[in-house]
Length: 135
Picture (cartoon, rainbow, N blue to C red):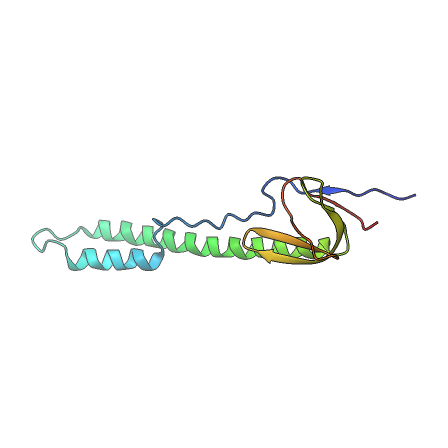
């Protein structure tokens, strides 16, 4: 008795959001701004020490956020590679249903996974793609 195992990739499952904001400030920039602020403060009205502590706490939060984003990127790449390995040798049908074939290899591109069929045709793995055991 054969079991039909069909997988459909949900919307956005393979697209890592790698868009970075041009206005985002990394921790190095934040530290430079803090030092510039210290150098250029009004000597007659120096900054209160509690303000320094608050800014250093903010600096710490920014640094932790940068490290968290880096780790999340690594997890997303690892997940994509695991997904790629599972596709090789399986039958895939494109979202529009026009292209079908067995997956010979998989490319990991910045836009997501691209399945390369045995005939050389490339199928982007994304929403609406159907994956089945090889026929």
